[in-house]
Image (cartoon, rainbow, N blue to C red; front, side, top):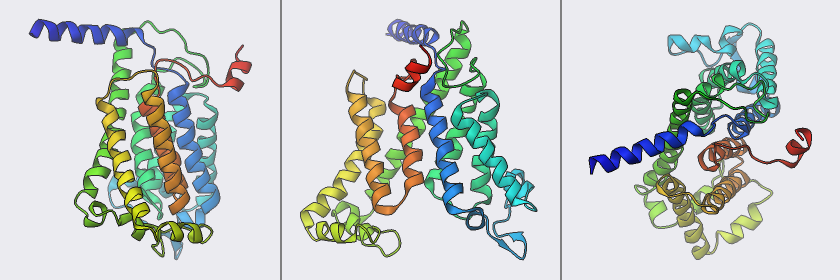
Length: 303
């Protein structure tokens, strides 16, 4: 029995020492995360994200290390902090020097969670994910994360990086598992009425544009129950992917389901940045991370 386990483990280790973990899959996730924060900065405005009272930031550091926030370090010139952050995010999006920009990306992302006044779950997830991506980017031997994969003959480093991909996948699974389990202790989710209350909420509900359509749908109890329990089921199966064996089609179907799930959440509740952040983590969760994603434009530029 022990010998069989050892053979299995050795086989897994041998496999992952031959697979290259540096590709445009993690690069695409980085770029989407950076684009999400850039859109938040652009469309919300620095005066709304970092309001001041009597020339003092409304959200002051609680812990000592929070003073390292770029928005606190440059609290006397938030405009400068804003444009430095924009510059860093643009560099991440275009992919150059991931070894340097990965650290800067995490810095500005976590700085927002320290100093910003409008924080939601997607921002916290982005701060965690940009931190976990640092080791992958630091060991990348390419000048741009969009470039073709380069050969690397360092098996120990490869195993180290694959362990971080495993941690990321575990983190994603925990997010969906927690979301599912937490609903089991709320009677409105169990009886199938939760989405009715969320869709008709005066603050978090559907926008005025879609109210007539959704209110009509939510008047049907069978549709309400179906939507409510479907949301719970989707969160459960997205968590369950961690325990499934990959084949050529199952990960693609689950990825599409996950993206559509967050698209409709963004459509109903206006959580666009959250939807984009979750799309980035779904890419890291589902896509094979040992090969480049094939983009037509990418292929034209590199052929």
